[in-house]
Length: 121
Length: 110
Image (cartoon, rainbow over all chains, first blue to last red):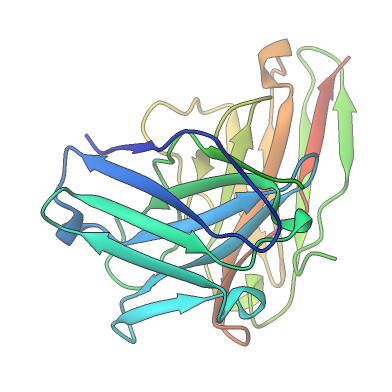
């Protein structure tokens, strides 16, 4: 059974960077595509990006291109998402998730518990 | 503005039925599978329905999903107070080459 466990809450100043981790257990990270979704306070879910099996590369939602980077350490089965040039609007809970679908995702499960990132001066 | 449109809120009495709609276009709902998620306050989303009308293991059969054209619907019968949550639809958008979610629907069981 796949479990995703994320790193703890972070407080950052505007302009800084944050790196959130997502440790996979129950499966090898090499077998699982990881996706990232965020949720601003009181707002809905917003897909950020993840592995696209059809292109064989990481893809990002347009608004995050150039400012978000995802990486993986297969030796520890841990995925990372880094957001640069943080601004107050990036204050949100960041989730990692995965899918059991081969090919483009048609669903996401399970989800990590979420990591609250607060951007404040 | 979300690419997928959901009603902001729905409500019904315990034991009653409610439906939540998710409206999109041919680039998303119309040509891709839709999934539904339940988010209880302060928790991570949970998959409720996948590939339009399939229930994951452990999801009761009082939940149902359907899709017609560019709209999808989640139905919940026999409402319980424990069903009070936010519900989100999601699907791949072929034009955006990105996954998209609806804006979410808050369900109140009166």
